[in-house]
Image 1 (spheres, rainbow, N blue to C red):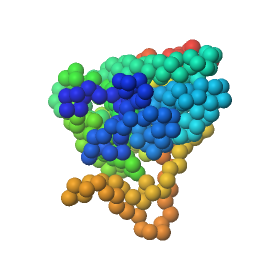
Image 2: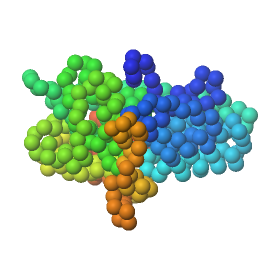
Image 3: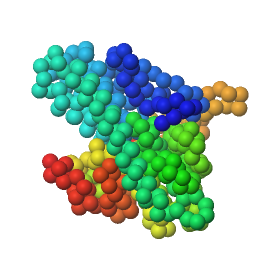
Image 4: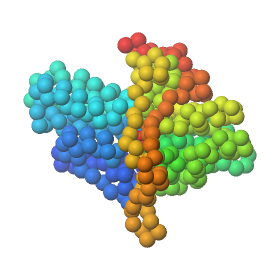
Length: 362
Ligand code: MRU
């Protein structure tokens, strides 16, 4: 996607082939900064500290991280150790495990001397595949948005967290249909949930949409239900970090409440996902590992002061206990459809298996 007219992706191989570059998402929206990651430790740190985040991007960076690890030591033991270290960086997005397994499978049978180059090539291919998958998700989702087009006024879409190009290599999942609808001349307006505690909606989704010229309004996390009751939301589209084989959807905390409100108000609730986000080993979303993060994310909020300084301020009394569950599970019955690169299906075991018979059976 473009920032000030220049094409960017959220991760790239540096021209010297010795490192990857990423956008430091902790600096957005107030400052645009890139970071060069030269080894597996740096890639792992970028994932753990959420310099980069979003399920598909976590997978892509982890794939490169494993390749960088093999440059230091390409033995069987080192391959397994780097896989385990990177896998431990964040628990919920299954794309992390998927990418690490994929790269390991692609190189594990090779002589150690050939592994680093092969892993680098495979990591690059994963990144390229992610772009194409998300572009295709956008095409399928564009049809869904088009169905809500009216004679007057925009199609109003609510989204939660950031499932845009910053969360993938390019395009995004939930935002890809929105970008493609906007580009196709369908008037769209996006209700952007701020997404406490880290404010990925307010900071990242709003910034992305603004860069692309998509009309949007940032709302408090709790406003969505009210807007749905008023008829101001035509459809919801969110991303996901892990979809169980039965169609249950795990996504950023607060997604479940939006799905409940959408169900109560007859508002379609769509989930956009690339197939590496499906966890075929889970028969229900109940077993999804839910990340619990540092309580400081609840206690403090980062922002720009009136004098232009980036600062954090406390919003919780000293001494109050805090809880910071980062994800929740939305039961499949509340999900209208799953938008994948192979098409749009009901959120059911049959729907998913019908679309991916090769993987469901594996
Ligand atoms: O904690 P984050 O910012 O990594 O969470 C991201 C989300 O929950 C996204 O909605 C999800 O990864 C889908 S990304 C296309």
